[in-house]
Length: 176
Image 1: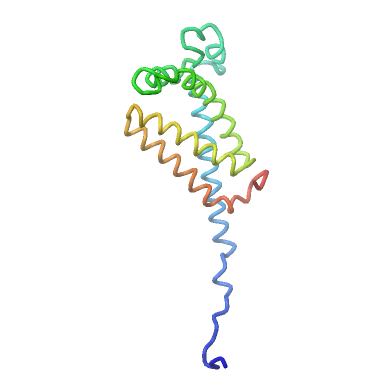
Image 2: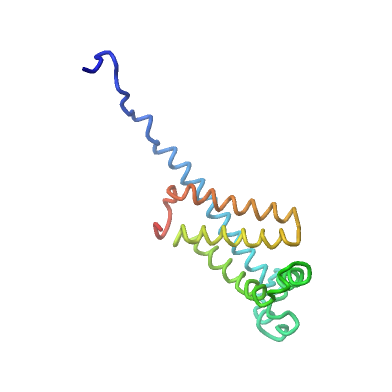
């Protein structure tokens, strides 16, 4: 027989998250979305070689006459990064892989940045963004550039935080 003096705790209204606490978490997630979406888009534009001096994106420099000189890697940072990767790391054995990665990177950054900003395919976009930052950090570990590794790791942790808080992503186009 149960002891009549003992009571079982019953959940109270204060145990469940309040409307205001979820609003704060939703706002925090929205800030993460805005920051990471814009960071990916601006980084992708930078990889194309746009410096703000040209009136439009310099896609002709990416695909046009400078293609032979830059191996199709634009006039931004991609040429210098790919040269460093193939000259100073064991990735020299895989130049085609480096070129493929460097060519697709700006497009992936732009696409994932747009998906994150729009709130479309949320989990997939955040995972993709985290993998981009991880791959860039891995490349910098081969060089090694400790300060850049630290920045890229911070971006990766922001993606991990966003994946942790993704249930508070209330302003979105798709739930997934």
